[in-house]
Image: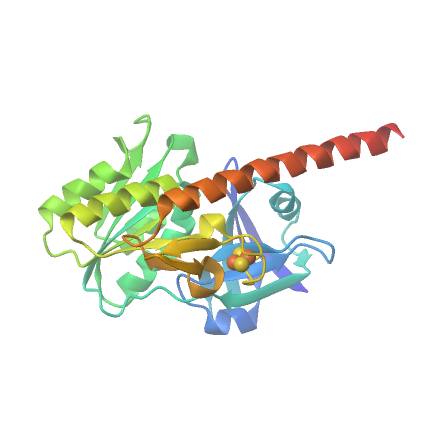
Length: 281
Ligand code: FES
């Protein structure tokens, strides 16, 4: 069993947990993920490692409460334990050849963008962070981004915090000002990563995207995370989750994601109806 050392609310639907998992913490790197199960009958939930502490033997995860499993996870408290916590899985972020980078995070994707920022900063690279949210109440990890970067830009769609607009506006301004950026990392919703990649292609800047939004069981078995990269079939959970954004077929990924979301919604509605029927009986 894996003990929950601490739990924190980041906004109305996003929470952070620190889990005691010494073997995972020992080998964890930015960009990798874990798979947890809340209890023995629970679904496998893949989540990117938001932080790790090797001395303490802990892993920090950040999750959005969107389905049955994350709701179950959210009902747990400090001192409770998870049935399974496997990892680190996937390939770590490639940062060695980078000198000057921009990390773009969108919404809850910022939880994955932060460890990349942290790894770049700790390795002595020059890093700018640009994060975007729908509105002020959804902003997360602002202080941490400020702490690890010299240059941090916050955007909200409605202008309720930071600058009004989208991350691509901030990114274009930074790319115009800094001709020596050698890599952009984009982590967030698929449409955001698609438009970041289209923009950086125009400027000829290498771009890495994290294809976590379409991961399901994280084992290479379900095929849920299948995507096309440079005309080849890849699996985000074993070949990624990071890929060259200029080679990813985003339109296919967006289509697959919308099919999955519809079927997930359908399943949840069916479960809800079933629960109601059971109560009535
Ligand atoms: Fe199932 Fe990758 S998440 S194959």
